[in-house]
Length: 97
Image (tube, rainbow, N blue to C red; front, side, top):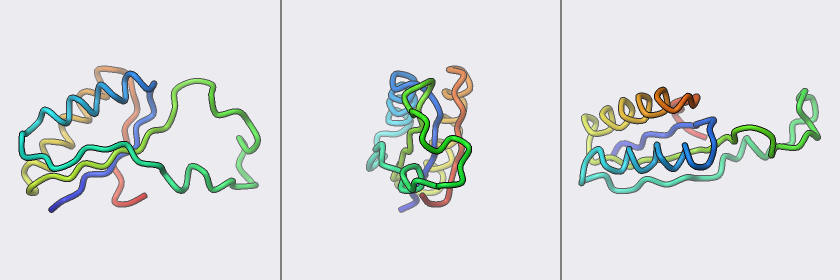
């Protein structure tokens, strides 16, 4: 079962919009879930944003989608990318978190 993973930089409302849009791609989608990104909380000391508040501007959200097959997984990618584009959000597809 293919798993589509992506990060989206957007408001909570826009992220939920993308999630709901992806859920409606196909009735056989097993799971669509926002997950915690381990790298987001790693506390890199050399980061230019180290110590800065992360509540300013859009947030980073990590989402996993379990699709029944590769064709549906591709439909999920296309749907998520198109919705994010329309909302002005930034989306990045990743192999793993």
